[in-house]
Length: 463
Image 1 (cartoon, one colour):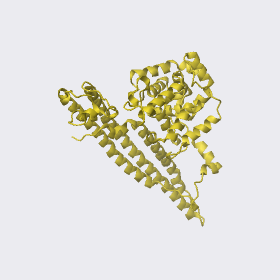
Image 2 (cartoon, one colour):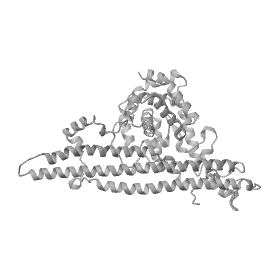
Image 3 (cartoon, one colour):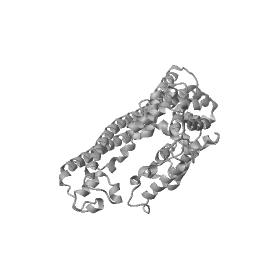
Image 4 (cartoon, helix red, strand yellow):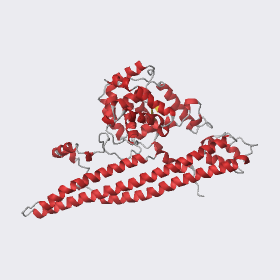
């Protein structure tokens, strides 16, 4: 049997088939828009009779334009199909991954009846590796205080769970890798069907939209066409490339420009409100900021304000800073070894980049994702920039709203416009905000229930 470890496929935790499907839908939208434009282009080419010395140029240019539209439509159609197939394979891969995690949890519980991890290496090891060490003839003391331990009575069951987990992880990795290879190949083919526009002279790109008033008027008229945007999507934003090592991402730069014109925020760093009256006052004092953040994210204002109502009554910001310090200290080679950050006591336990900051508590990792950074490769400077942005109440509201918009994209009602979201749908988004992949747990569901119960107070405070 071919086996893999969880670390080999752990990236699947962050993969979301719904978001891949959403991108496929965006490509289909562009295909449909181009197909719609092809018909009038064909009529112009074949239905116009023009006798002139330049008529052949006119006909030739129309033919070229129509062929260009057709090739672009074909390219976007191929890209949409590739992403649709990858999303389906990703769903299968995540199912296998879930099976592996369940077997792994059972293995961990079984191991716990025989030994306790005593070193940092052991604490960080996944259950499959722990069992491999326990059943081996060497290296036992590196993992467990088990000098006199007899594991023969659990060996058969532990071996079965170990192989079940490893087999499922292998199936997950194979399903994703094969589908990704096919998808990338198809996307390259699709890309080759698209034209490459170049500016003569090697200069920078020309902003035709900004330069020509007629194009701006055409664009304004086209906004009523449903093919110009996916249903339920927020306002269009400029596309940006990878951030790399730049300290300030384009997304963060845009947020900073937007908040500069907004009123000063009512901060709660030292003394967060502990009553409904205090929360209502905080919402009233910051309603213009919350409203602007919601509009930018394409969400109802009560959605963003309702999450703020739930979060602003948390612990003072100084406690978040303390948790951040101890987690980073435990994670550093010079720190609190052998205790890992996840094994710190009580609420201090957790990964360093899962620490939440700001009045609307957002984990640093999620904030980095919303702002366009790669959370797996944050530089120290970028990490400090993201943390600072989250601690600023105005920027924090925009980042939280961006995260909520991402969550909405992952649901089955991503195409529902902001003004048509039901309270039940907003309640689910709130539960997902709190629970992440475990949003159906009782704790996350209670959070969603409380969010919905407070919507009346939130709407009143936002007036």
